Image (cartoon, rainbow, N blue to C red; front, side):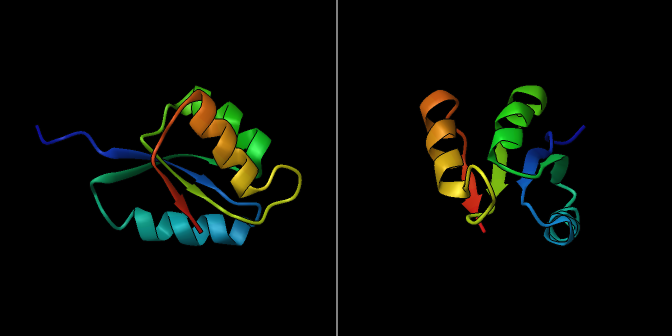
Length: 84
């Protein structure tokens, strides 16, 4: 049995971009997209639910933007983030 895949949460307000990012990530068998979030508030809830290893995070989102979300994540549950 090989190593466990890296679990990724994709956070973007655009459904199109969520699909594009997911399609790119899922080309690598070592990566598993475990969930999606539409905004920062949704992301904070999904982090608790899915326990991802890494998050892709859109910078510009309505409500809580990516930078505000990143501050919350780093304050409560530090995770590697990829800003898009």
